[in-house]
Image (cartoon, rainbow, N blue to C red; front, side, top):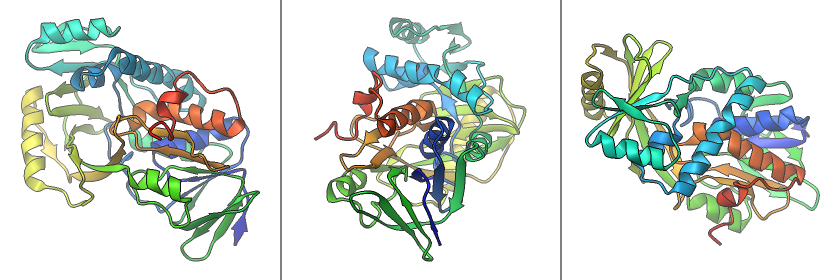
Amino acid sequence: MTSSPDVIVIGAGVLGLCTAAELAGRGHAVTVIDPGGANASSIAAGMLAPALESLLDDLSADRAALLKRARDLWPAFAEAHGLTLHREGAEWRGPDAAAAIARLLSLGFEARAARGGLTTPDDWRIEPATALAALARTSGVTSVRGRVARLTADTRRWRIEAEGGRTWFAPTVVLATGAAAAIPGLPEQVAALVDAIQPIRGQLTPIAMEPPRRAVRAPGLYVAPTASGAVVGATMEPGRRDLDPDAQEAQTRVEAGLALLGAAGEAGPSRVGIRGAVADGLPLAGASGEIGLHLALAPRRNGWLLGPLVAAVVADGIEGRPPAPDAAALDPLRFA
């Protein structure tokens, strides 16, 4: 069987589906190919957290501003695609709250003292599973289950071959395959970019409990509300791709999370996802240097926060529009 949409997106994580939805909203016919099952975007807390990410990672003022601009794209994106955005803010608990508040204020965020730490209204969240499902249903997006086995190109179009023999042709391909290995047939320089992405193993655990009012974070720990309780996480283990949960790690974090909240709850099965990252912690988003091939990869742990920004940068590149101010920071060729 063959099919010829305007754009093929390979990968149905947050960057792939945000890009597909953005392109469909601009009138493109988009097919998303994904093998199905859980991915790093579904195994996430859905935090849109420019403030606390900037604090905990000691980011520069320029990087913090980029994350804030990325978050500011979310209200319009959520409205356009029927997504529910939770804007109750977030809380941080830890030592030297006064210094943390001063740091956030210096970066342009709001913050005030609270029990054992601070609160900020600048960090929001979204429910990952619900949002992924809604994005996949976007009008103009066709989702297909399949594992791409090979990519090849001629002067006019890309040929995408899936396991089992199904084939697609499209003038434009967006590679949104997370931390997976390079697909056979990719041009050498693009395959090198993909294979240089560092995998980062992350584990989180759902807890059946009364949901906290907002996400609560502490050094090495977070507890985020969900529709059915909370999730506690998450590990950041560079270089690991194994998917078996660590029961002892889960127990330790659940106990710490419940203690942080002063609450009780029952832990469910832990889940593991593999995120991707490059040296500066920002995604590879935009043109790959090969005609018709664009990347939406490696957002580290900020895939949900950066989803609409990556989508806009990639879509603008596909359409030949002038690049957005933040496009250069995400350029896949910035390390060349």
